[in-house]
Image (tube, rainbow, N blue to C red; front, side, top):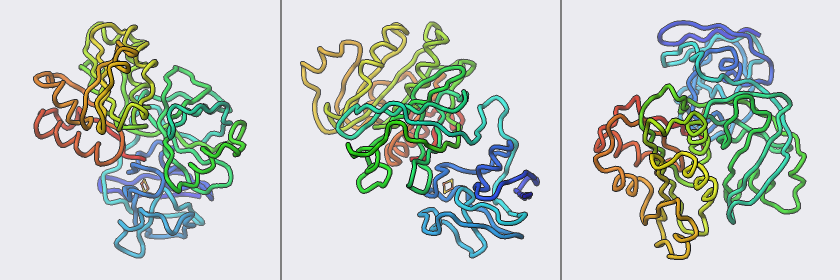
Length: 348
Ligand code: FES
């Protein structure tokens, strides 16, 4: 089926398949349609149906609250039943050829490991190598539960056959209940993937000091970015500062991974963990000599430690939306980091 998208600046045409969301078909054909979550919550992908018929996979999607007119729909949830003409109220350009573009793939969960009481590391073996840029994420659909969930890749390889994710348990979440229930047959399960996605990517040609601010499972994409930078010996020339916020010591993870990255990178990479709810103990500090610790919300800790060091910075932010919003605010208004050097994807 043919889809014609009329954007503010120009029109785009692409082929779309039945039962595949309009957003996925457009992105897979190199049309950078607007999106953030890709999973029906943010409303960013809203469009107006001018001609044709759609199938809505999730009429109760929370992102529908952003629709103001009966002809509007979410491109990440609706697929074509006929040829379509749609209107998008933003500028739409071809996707940046320098960034890895998405496609559909399938894979199998090959390994899971608990990192804390409510955070899991999950490996998916893909049916074919699929490259991604450091900092990108993917949409995953698990068996028997409709809808895709967005998770960031932790690892970085040039031609990865395995994508590694960090997943946080969500109260009453159907996917969480399946993944975190000891009796679920998670290992070996087939999953559907659409990715890689996201605009908050890192390539060594950025050539600026790196500042990464992440809360909770948002740290996943930062590990990928720092791994990519360490592989390129980036910290021989530039500084790197990672601020990783969690509530307490029992919520901390990736300490060993960051210690190894820090020892490999040398003194120009600094990693600081921020605990919002408790002071770090002396034992904990001694057990992790490569990591610095501080008390407070992650954006406050970042602000204190980065005082006077915001020149020539490229900032990456991830985590719960309030933490992301606070970090963006202080970077823009107080630290005066240019808006085009603050990168984030709100997809969780
Ligand atoms: Fe479609 Fe977020 S609701 S991209």
